[in-house]
Length: 75
Picture (tube, one colour):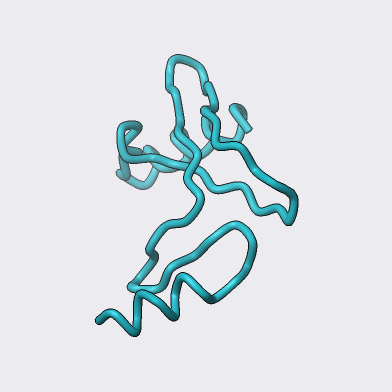
C-alpha cells in the first residue's frame, strides 16, 4: 500500500496534480469486523474511514445501502 501511495503521488505530479496528504484517507472493504487503523506511507500517516461521500453518494466498506438510504431520506 505504501508503494501504491508513492506511485500515486509521483504520477499525479506528472499531470500537475498534488495529493493533499492531510485530506487523503483510505477505506478497507471487508465483510469481517474491521477495526479502524492508520497506514504509514513514508513520512505520511493515512487514516482509515468506514465510509465516505463521493459525488453525493455514500460508499462504505461492507457494500450495504442502509447508510445511503438514511442520508437520502434525511435530505
